[in-house]
Image (cartoon, rainbow, N blue to C red; front, side, top):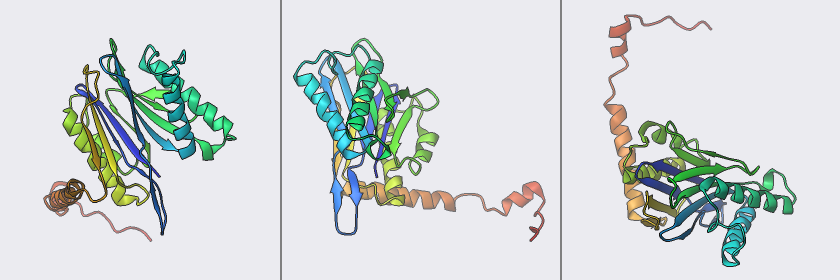
Length: 250
């Protein structure tokens, strides 16, 4: 299983991905699910992947090959982020079909970045090749095991959120997912992109023995426990309603 999240705010884009592809009793396999492409000063892309590993690797390899061979359509020639998403979607469908098709070969991607003269953009590319984008109401995209890490993003993230805060929320979102699903795990990759910089931003690689990762997990747990303990007691609701309710009918 996989979990990847990307957040688009006014100041840039934060990307966060785990690296676990399987977690059995005897073996844990890890592969990076974050891939960076770009031309400094002109365009920058980050791709996050989830789904069939063979399909995602084949798509990334073809993207690199198209750039090196100067194919007519490649990430260095697309006019905008929508065209880039269409291009990746077509490659994904082609690789799935080549393998025989079906759910087992499906892959999903998040494409983020900026092309000179255009605003930063995030797209989620479905296995069928089509894609959607973020909105002001939902300025983040998730793929893989997304349900456990969504609540903090819904509560905190807005377009005005500082970029570093967005990255930290993504990491806490990842920590919540790892806590609830053992098939998601470190190393964790975090990449930042600053709006209109057109260069790669800060990159962080957090291995399983990362002291910082342990601190985030510990402090987040402590703060949640403290928050629950500071809530008004349930008995105080009776002072407002004046009604204890009736016993349920069995």
